[in-house]
Image 1 (tube, helix red, strand yellow):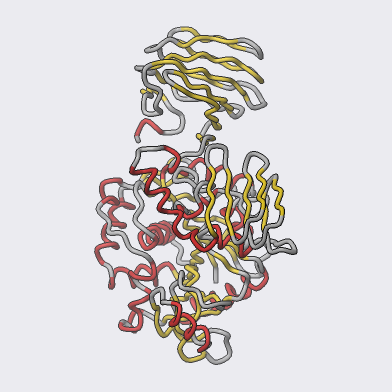
Image 2: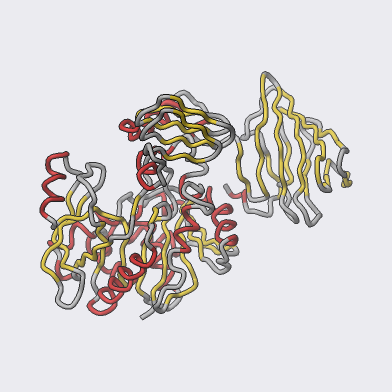
Length: 482
């Protein structure tokens, strides 16, 4: 029995704003330790005592593809297969694409489906549960879900009710999925001992999932098959047929298949495996506080912080010293360009801030000040009427696209490293403390020929400085097709 891990990494995590942004969501952040949540998800299977296929499958969207590939490389994953969704269509289509990819290789392993943005504190307990889930999925063709043993009456999660116990196993038959309850109902669920939180983690054979989906949601099945049939492969990336996938309905694994199994027993057994492993979906700032280490007053702190006479408070300092005085059950989250202050009990409403930012056309809901690109990153240091200053870092051997701008000119000053500059018909080198000027309307490219990162300061000037004022003529990262 071979297990193949499938990581779903397409969410945006709006309730963790300002740390999580649409263009750099929570699964890519190092929220609880040195590594990102995506990297921690990969590491969760290290040392697993079972037959694990080392060809990781990741389903994500186009925008995150290069940072995901780089984060996987940093944690030693060299042969991942990254299926790129041109638009978001929820977890059922994402999983279907991963299953089609596996079947297309001539294999039918047990798929272990994991969201990329969860925290699990007890790796050993997680792996024991996975081993049990694999036995159920491989032995009887079951569709397995993992229920979190609830520690409290939580109204923010969906619940799963366990049915009859399965002899010789910690698992039970899957009785039903239920929606997020009110407080009184949630308390009764927990008191009964028969209900578990829905973790969003699943296991089943690829063929079993595809057969169930084809029966219950033939529209999703047909759209995903059409999108995958028209795919192209580019290095580690699988690019789908955009038009076919845009026609795919949006639905979750739960709604599309798992909730319907009770009324469609011919499609296979639903099995529930309990999971008590310190799980959290880290879906909001109060959830991060709950899984963090606390001081004697119940405070949790990240970064350069000072807390005085405060209790039950989370302070997240991303870029500077943040001090909190006399705070009780509060959240203070700071990034380079935004600060959030909210009662811990209101952190579910942070998404309203993101909605307001979008409605007002402000970039703070989508981008950080520091923006990652396939060639490196840039940090917008300052800006005003008709000017903007950026710090740009280009990785060794990487280059920006050959491009031009209709509305702005640029000055480049090399701070560290060596730059190869293409400007019109010219190609020349710049060393530290040297500079050049790129007039408006002139084609240009920046390339790092060295072995160390290239760092420059860019000063833009012009009537319009938006990122959409880029006309690309050549690009090694395939961005011409977007």
